Image (cartoon, rainbow, N blue to C red; front, side, top):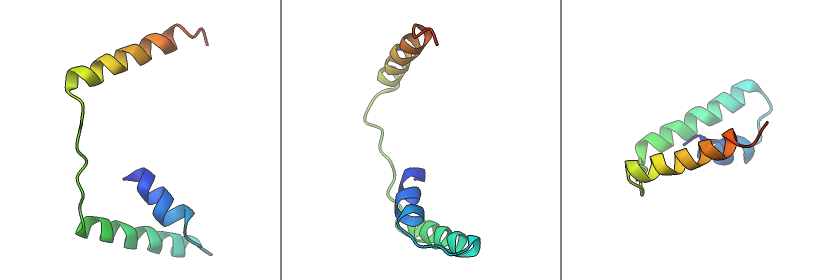
Length: 64
């Protein structure tokens, strides 16, 4: 949702004030809530944990 609101309500809009930005975000959230489209997980918990484990190993070995 945050990526979508950033792309569709914030970056694409023209806002001349904080109030206009806030109104735009409020309108977008209201529309989003009326037309809910739930996210569907495509991986199992084990697949997600395996992927996370690989990422953590890579960043631990990066020596930064």
